[in-house]
Image 1 (cartoon, helix red, strand yellow):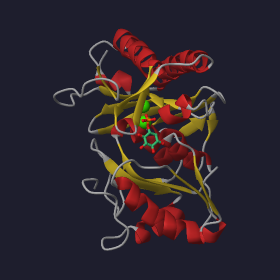
Image 2: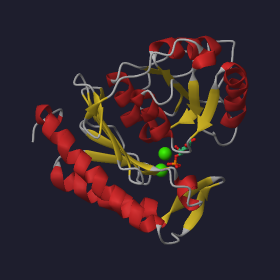
Image 3: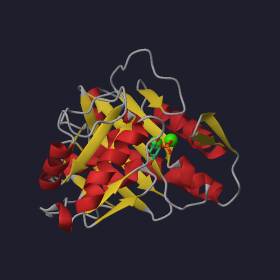
Length: 271
Ligand code: IPD
Ligand code: CA
Ligand code: CA
C-alpha cells in the first residue's frame, strides 16, 4: 500500500471499524472489574488498556502493512517514520477505573508531516468522531461544524485535570475562564472533550499537559470542523507533549489572550 492510498476515505472507513471493534472490547471489559494499577504516581493503567492496545497493534499492522504504531502503552519508535499511527487504546482510564462511563479509543495517522486522519470512538454512547484532512469531520457519518458562540459569558467550556506540576497552570487558567464562562465541564477523556468542540457541544476546551496520543486525532477533527487548536500562547501542535487550547475561532482567540506570554502558564516543560 502506498502512502497516497492511506490518506483516503477507504482507509478512514477501515480505521472506523477497527476503533469500533476496540470499543466493543472496552465496553465488555467495563462490565467486569478490570485490574487497575499505577504506572507512575497518579497515572493509572488497566487490563483493558493493555488488551485494547494489543488488539490495535495487531489489527493496524495487519491491515496496513509497512506502517508503524506509536501507542501510549507501547514504546515510542526511535524515530517517527511515516506513516505512523498515533494511538490511545483507552483515553479516560481514571473514569474507566471508577466505572464512570466516559472514555474513548483514539487513532490518528501521521503522514506528510501532519495528522491526516483521526478517529475518536466513545463505545458507551456509540459516538464515532472522524476526520480526513481536507475532507471535513463527521459524527456517525453526519457533518460536524464548530459553534458560533462569540463571547465567553455565553460559552460552555470544557477542560481536563492535569497531573503533577501542570495542575497549577491548569487551575490558574480555570480560575480565569471559570469566572467569565457560562459554565465549565470536565469530561475526564481529553480526546472526547476536544471532539465535543468539533460537534459544537462545547465552545472551547483547554488542558495544561497532553501527549500526542491524547490530542492528535481529536485536534484534526476540530480543525476539519472549522475550529482552531494550538498550544497555550498559540504554537502549532506537533509530536511533543504540549499544553492545548481549542475552540471555535472566537473562543480560541479569547483563550489565546488568556495564555499569551506573561499570562497563565502551563507547568514546566510543556510548550
Ligand atoms: C488522560 C485523560 C485526561 C487528561 C489526562 C490524560 P489517559 O488520558 O485524557 O482527561 O486530563 O492528561 O492523560 O491516561 O486516561 O489515557
Ligand atoms: Ca489519554
Ligand atoms: Ca490512555
